[in-house]
Image (cartoon, rainbow, N blue to C red; front, side, top):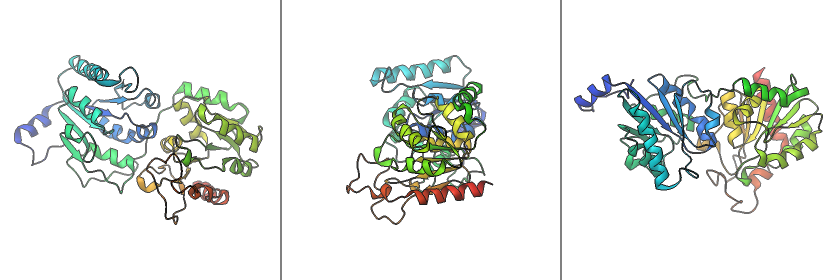
Length: 364
């Protein structure tokens, strides 16, 4: 179904919306975590008509196997599709896909709000373009949705599906992200785990693109956990040095380095098999939300008040709420502005262990 018409719309517009077949395009060319948090919006739109998604090459694999997506379009905005020529080429590809199908009313949802994304949706000929009221590309939108700073980002994105209904509230479970590891991902995790298969796993994700968001005590935590659990360390190849330190601290018979050894979806499958995940404010916590794995998310310079906390049941947030200088950055500054980095250094292992214990007890 098309966007719900209201009395404020012209009668001709209401009639057109009521009779047209509607196709949807979700534009999400931001970070991996944002892509995962867009899946509730995709699921909502899929109940109304076909949904296509435009993503970066790095984020595309995480949406594989998603049954709510008709076509996954790749926009390599920093590579082969860079610049004005690349933008026009992607817009043309989107237009050509329309010509091959029956006429439809087309709506683009700008989950990533740059000027570039807005221009692309306009060049691709979308009848309606929905985005946030404060986005950089808002001049190219036909409908602007208030960005609710008091809500989780998954809900903010979900609300793009309701541009004429500011009072709508998400039904229970509607905001949980969803990922769909397949047979190949399950097999890859089986092979990696080897003798750890069937053991009670605690996953650790020590990495982050921003150094100030990396909690420094994962090795100490792993040492404390190793007598009760098997430890698996998840992340990319850039996190391997951290993983090796953790494995050395816990012992090779008790810990496994999975960094750089699995695809994104296979990493989600591995996290889904863990009893819990301890992670920085980074992409693995969103993978855990999608897989329903209880999460202890560690926040230093950032904060869950920005709308990026864990969504899995029985999750906890580790942070020093009384520290007056935090949060100091939405993503994590290159270095502590005050030079002391107390928001992470003073967040001790005992505190994280207690939160993990609470989460595990709540799960049983």
